[in-house]
Image (cartoon, rainbow, N blue to C red; front, side, top):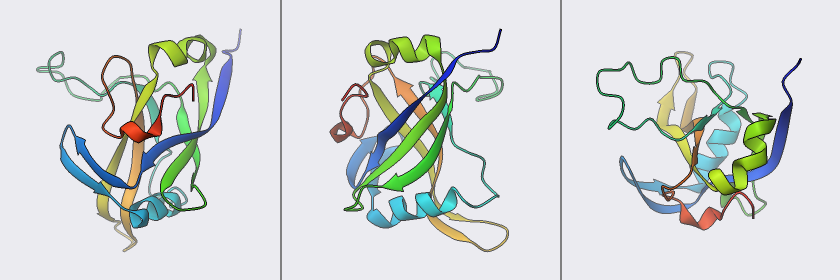
Length: 150
């Protein structure tokens, strides 16, 4: 039996502003959002993955981080809102069981990205999106995005 996979179109994943993240203060700019859209078409980068939370170091001591954790979908069709202030993505390939509980179990999300990227071919991007972590009880750094249900 084939798995049932569902999409969630036009989900806000980042917004221009200054955000207190787990790795420090991040000033997200309109240039970064524009470059994230451009970078998705560069074959150097794989499509960003959708995952259940960020890896928590409290539970991963001695474990090779990120190795073997399943993705629960991907991000596709990155684009900005007309004003260029918010980055949108279509979440695709979400297992039906997760989609059924997404709004209550994982109401928030947190973008994962690299900033100031230069490829071996010389292309430069202010930001490249690598993933999106679904968040349950932990609040997101970018609180203006609203819940997924919205």
